[in-house]
Length: 259
Image 1 (cartoon, rainbow, N blue to C red):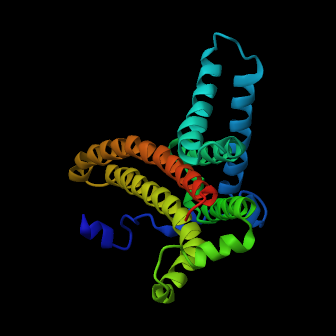
Image 2 (cartoon, helix red, strand yellow; image 1 turned 180 degrees about the vertical axis):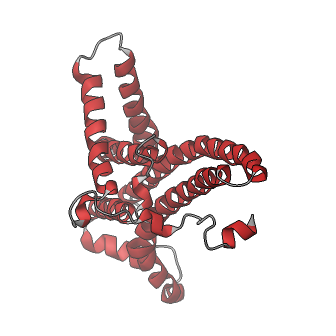
Image 3 (cartoon, rainbow, N blue to C red; image 1 turned 180 degrees about the horizontal axis):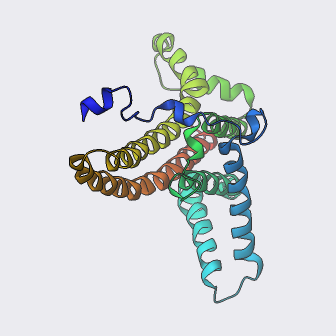
């Protein structure tokens, strides 16, 4: 297999270059597939939940039940249980965040779409920046600007000598580390998962075109790719949950009276 991979006309494994998709039409960077998938996700989520809530009944239909289940999960598990008594004003953002990320992640295993939007790092960056603004705004509104800055730079209950080391760490954590790690976690998982699927499915297709010995190995590559698809679905759901959960935790920390 190594000889085939190394040969000039052999199998070319997928790489980061496969995520840089050309514009669908024109020469505009805003007409690429990830952009259209992001817009498609907004349309799908909007249509689904509008349809689910349009004719709400005491005994819900299957569509209404599905919509209410997702909303109740975000409202109760990620809002009420994490943020506390002020959770309701943040539920619209958490709900939008969760459904948007989940839909764009699942695109990675949907036939004919087969590209997770969040594997383009700019999308997680933007979502992390929005979260960054939301939880800092919530903290400033709750505590005041200068008390909040003081809380970040000089955590209470710490010896003054420790502030020399602790203050830069705390400032970097709140201003840089949180948004960067929040976005990179989502991006890296979607990127790596999609790359693995490409390796096994494209590799299986390449093996089918080889000698008889390689053709016999091809079904194992496809089979492993199918197993990874189910695993990737779980990762996609988990990453949407984790991003929203961490956002809720940051907001809860912003509303806490003590650091």
